[in-house]
Length: 438
Image (cartoon, rainbow, N blue to C red; front, side):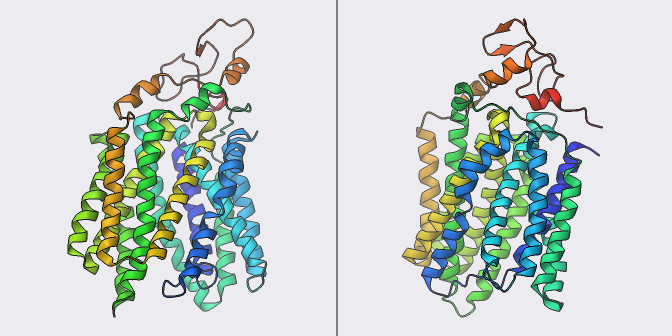
């Protein structure tokens, strides 16, 4: 079994456990009726963002520096999720449920960051990153949907506690599967000055700006449609259609991303996603009908899926490998904040239907123009990649005494890795210690 297949199996089980938890708590913690008071919806948005306050400053650096590597992080997360879901089943009707759910959300984000940081070690070259991320996105959508069915049956026939126990069993399978992941021990030293500069490289700033706008549009569109469509007699049906179209569009984006990547680079994918969002938002605003809103929901989720896969590949390609956990945690926090703020605006202003669609189009168009005017064009990213260096402290630790060094390059031992010429120094201790794939 290949490294990627092991990661895919683990990811499928983790997503299945998440889906079971959401189904079991659908009528309690995760129940937000857009027809209810807007203040309650705003409170939900604040709660949805709160776990990221822990992920960025604490979890990201921990993932990069933990002695057991990212594989151990995933194992610990899976084990903790088992305990938390069993405790939720025990105290489902008590006040203890809410801190347990909050802890689960923090661990969920921890896993997402660890998984994204682990992907580069499962592919043979940088060109396969988008395809690998695409397959994991499809696994998340399809297997998560399949796992919902038994959880729904258990919820209906027995109750939420049974669905939570079912979720715990899925996390148990994920824990066993995670023990077979490739070891990924990362540099134990803090980030160096050179790597800190790489975390602010033009390609990463370009991608994060584009992805922030795309995620903000997703949050704004969802809550704008939630309130606007409910004003119609068949509003529930219309909003359900919008949610279904969004889910289908996300799966389509995940499936088509590898083919699109063969035609263009990751930065161009993000630029194209913004352009499509801008044209769709402004064009559909002219129609101003509920069907136009449903169509826009599909468009923004489709391009957000494309953009996410492109951006993840940029981070996996250009960010220092020993600090990718920190990078993913920081960027995910930024994107979730953009989603929550945009959703908050949609709830607070209650704009007419066509105006809300126009806001989405103008936001995407404005970001597109900003990136074109800024001096962070995609053409600069290739030059940035050539300047990548590993943490100097890691380099000293790997090189045997007396080894001659050049600036930025050390002649240490370590087998060649995918996407790099043989004999070249690996970027982190993980690559020199990684066993061959069987």
